[in-house]
Image (cartoon, rainbow, N blue to C red; front, side):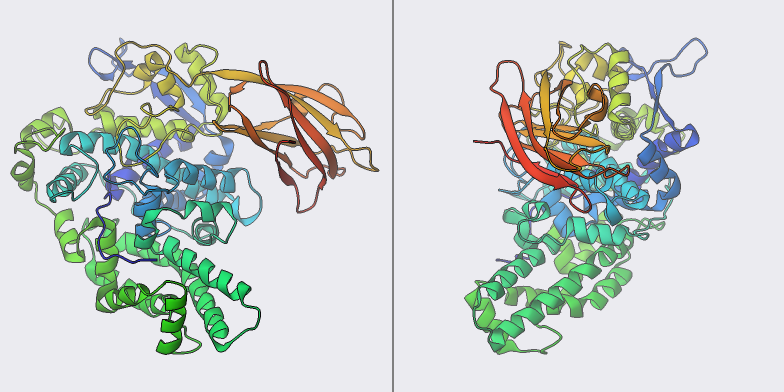
Length: 633
């Protein structure tokens, strides 16, 4: 483990003020009548098409997923907190260093911000969605769903915001080899932010969201899906990921010790302090984000930020190896740190003692707290100083006057932007609206756009399955897997405006990745007493090319399904081709009196491929309602 004081990593695309304002526009459309409206884009003007009455022409109104609608209406403050996204949670460092960047060199970015061997953002978005929208218990509530809907809205904003900003700066935010790119990012983002109307400055991680953040974004115990997400070379530059990894290292060493020693007791105390500190992290991260990035003054409140982090400093020091229970046992710390290869923690302690705020802001943005505050308040006159210069490689030279006219489309008399006239802002709102829809409504929109029958959403949400980085450009279409509407460019051009920096196909054909297939499932219920079930049964098929998403089987089976010693057959039609099968998750919703089910096996067949059998031979009941099965050899 190594802790570094500096990282050339991404800053923000839209600033939090812009993120929240645009997300609120989408939320208003959803909340008023439970529907969101999509409008026709006129390709000749790249603006909304107007009818004879002068009003925008509708493509149609589409029903918001009832779960999302309930969440938005009951918990708007949690939604806005979610919109702060990985700029704030689980902490600013883990969000910037682990969630934003790709885990490998990928299309749409140049490698300046890769978290090598990390997960990239899509597995994170999927993880949060599954926890809040398909799970049960305290992590699947309207409040947590509001937070996750906001988190996906943040990702939508990054797709279009970074494409715009990268167009002018030449690349994702970086300091390689000099800080001109980084400064231009801050100037463009800050200037855009100045002309966005004020959003509602009210956020909350109450009603269980703080616990959700801890359980689903921080406490990655060994062998859990979350542990696989808190990975990559950038772990050393974070708080949540780094201390979770440290905790797991200490825990493994304690378990491997046959005869406890005083050092074992020290390690247990250290683990307890890490756990206690990580439980506090969601609240600290939320308060810090409000002080530094999201408050009505538009300024970074450094005094408040220092107060927050100074209060957290004792816990942070204990997490770094000075447990409360044993005091400053330097000898014990040095012995354990050396044995486990954690000596660099001593450097971390020195940095935190000097200034925990500077450590956090510099590791996240490359700037000290004072430099960050100054950059966020850069006067508009700074625009020409930095942008009306010979461009960096792949960048665009522009004056403030040109930017006002061509990008912001400001009225010469002044005032705020009208997001409906600004392509990256409008596209952000359209993508957020799309993320509010259930799968069937997205596919109804696809049919209205005239998409071929095979171009359908197979993921559980339109924001899942395609973004390999939140910092690069054109992520909706440049990767092997595209956002569903981008797979049909003719339809995409009707919903989304063309924006600067966009790599849009000139020949609107269906893009690769649109192949869908039929899977025939055979489900065998065991020959045991009470083996049959009246509960809802759901299946997710997983292969080397992704997942089909979850499908309910009851309505696809003829007759009384899933009775004792019965073999049922059904077909999942026109779903995503996931390639070579690697797993299958079967889930019961546990509803109805006769809910317990003893499943013997499921087979999966598709044309041109061998049938694959998944043995279960277990009960799905009580607290064990879901099983992940592997193919039978």
